[in-house]
Image (cartoon, rainbow, N blue to C red; front, top):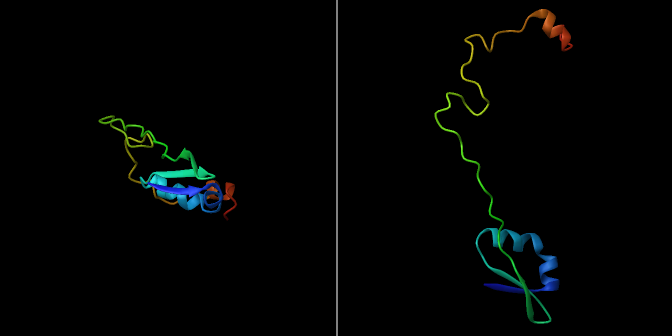
Length: 81
């Protein structure tokens, strides 16, 4: 456990936050008396659906010509001539 006074903590807040995320317990004190203790926020991971037959974009198959050149009229619509 590491302890820092309020002024030190203000000066080095981003470094102290990184240390806390890394698992270190950081205590911030005022006038030598502990005030707060840092803890990292737990991030909940959304589980992936398995065996859905699709990838993350919802695409189940890709056409063989997906990378073929676009038609001229479509290219003109995007400003390519």
